[in-house]
Length: 606
Image (cartoon, rainbow, N blue to C red):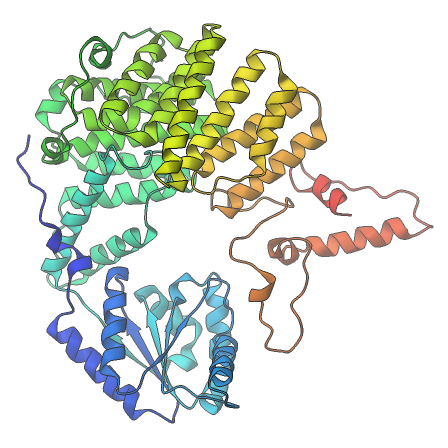
């Protein structure tokens, strides 16, 4: 062990109070706002740290003599003036006045606007409108990136603005980065946390860490950043890419972060098998039935109790966690590529070999977090002998340490083992265990875990029905769950949709299979797992008809398809095609294009 200890939580920015300079600056800004009542003034308050914004907003409200109107923008906002006008009209109606002008307006949410360049362009064009119709000061709470784009896209409006910056002392930033790294490490080995392959990253953490590193590099003289901190940043970037299925990018970030750690822990290194290089195409594939003696101890001897405190003191163990996350990427890629054998073998080498070495040194917290995923890899490879060791060991480990979020995965793997053995009664018994666990989750009122258990239970039941050659019942079961999307665990729900599509395809019900695939693509788009899906039916989480700009007085358009299709010109294609097939002088219309561009979906829309 390297002897490093976890710093106290008080180093976190969440606990940080505004410095004396920040308080003085906010007091001066409040005084300027109070003096500007009755005339238009524009102020930019820059705060790059999400964790400090709520404190700064509270302080600014407290420092102003008159209360400020707070306006939170949504990602689909295109015109600040329109949103502000509606808010003022609503304020007037609430006060039973024709118009009730605020003493000042504080605008937040600017960093989340989807079309920021378009928003800023409109803002610049309407600068005179603001001056004529907004006789009150406006404060925009922004980040550094917003100011850079504001100065480029709204040059005329920017000349009217004054800019104040909330800064953090470099020493506090360094302490916070260390604390954030250790908090992440503790979360990665927390056996009671949600499954490691489910999204958990808070994007605010990534943006705050990015801002912190930028601030440390810009101070004079520049601060030297420790390799462990840079490795932590690479991990955050990799995890963010993984959760959005940008898997090649995620692997690159993980590998770079692992390479920064040039001094691995000798205790782990001495007991570890060499970590394979996933980019080496000449690396021999491990197809042997490795007994995994370290993992076998979970069955042969009483399961050891997990001690996270001792493991947390060894920050070098983070290198093992990074390598395991690379294995996660390859397993996820195998799922997206219909269980690619090459990706599965790479995932097996990364996950099982490192889990074995972690078991060899007693790092049971790491084993507990990843062993279930290793079991899924073995199941997809149909390595039933090794899976028997892993699944039985995982069950004992998770039951002993109360890792309830992983137990449904363990029971599902054990049911798959029973199915492989042809023992349907035992498989049904494991399903009963999943249902018992589901009932316990319901009593604990944990909807996220309940949803995960429900989807796993449905998938396992369907596999048993298929083994009994009751295909119609399996499809009916999957169809029932299909209409209950699992937003808390999107990848599980996507797996269910893919299983259902495969069954329809095997039955040559191609049209239904296509519809299920379209639902899968729409769900992936809705949850940020797919950038654009051509002409399939999009369900944008950011768009509702009521959120459209209605300042002109016209009612919002009723759209049969998502706005991305309208923007791409697809609605024009629909209209043109309808016109052509309605004409009597045109007997045949040919619709052609590359595979996947949306010909079938366009035809269905018509």
